Length: 107
Image 1 (cartoon, one colour):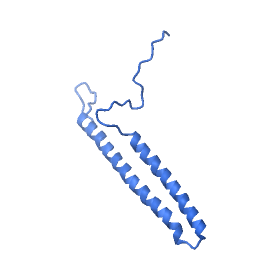
Image 2 (spheres, one colour):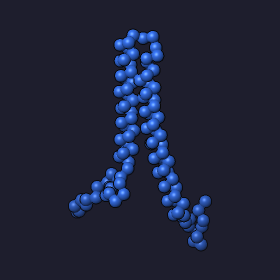
Image 3 (spheres, rainbow, N blue to C red):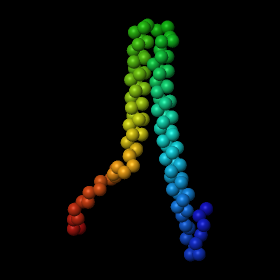
Image 4 (spheres, rainbow, N blue to C red):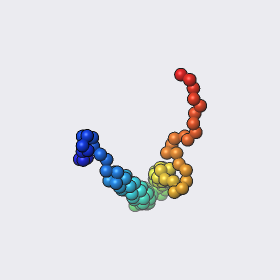
């Protein structure tokens, strides 16, 4: 609960707020890294599993290639989302917003 000032308005503990944001970012980065590792492992299992069945060899190969295509698609999407959410320190970033000013128009 926020502490109250003499006027009765709540105050914000900036240190706790920034630390919470930092920790949320660390957790999100960890989830992204573990997610990539899990997707790669799941793709490998999905590609190898058809070869443990009694199906025709052509069906095994087709299923394995299809599973590989699906796994690589998911892996690419997950990694591109993670890449788009990062930037280098000192690199200008706009957080999806433009920095140019639009001309003023009279209402």
